[in-house]
Length: 273
Image 1 (cartoon, helix red, strand yellow):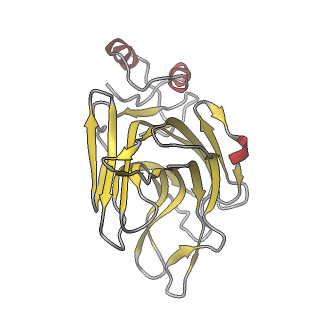
Image 2 (cartoon, one colour):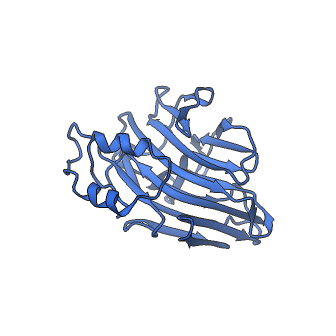
């Protein structure tokens, strides 16, 4: 099995000390026998999808404009591939599911994954893209339109690993537009990423006040130089049990021609799934 739906603190220690994403059959059997806990108890709730045997039930695949997934069983990598040549659109190869809900009360969550930026994108220069997204999901703007907007996003580019924090204002038509000065970009690593494999964890405190924060951990080390403190959930967005979605995979940062190949070993959250 590739899922840890509900496990105790011992499993948490095991998870965060993993040096490889693929579990042996014996470990999988052992994990199935761990006692179950319920959300809201004192025990940590864990959820992981090791993608070396495909996607867990519950993921929605978002594939469009030259996007595709390729499960390479020999390496245990699920490759998110984009070859988009259509102007004014973005290609994507992602999976998404509910992360949590925001009720106006500060809430801290962890999203984590292990990714590889291939040296080339099947013969093209690899431009990279977004690898982890958190999004305010399906809310109605004053214009009456349904909206889906990124909140905190990580991206892996040929020369940098970064995350972005978004904030929004309403435009004259009642639609959300990115607030001046945003997105705020924090650099986790300014190095060559081509051919590199990284484990990135983002600890996000969702807040519509300055008490919000983002903390990045790269390959087991906290990157304090990339700390962000401030609003992480826009004050204009709904707070009545508003769904926050999370995504993993490959989403180029700009419309138009983009060739990108990003491997996903696993995706993790500490939120019950």
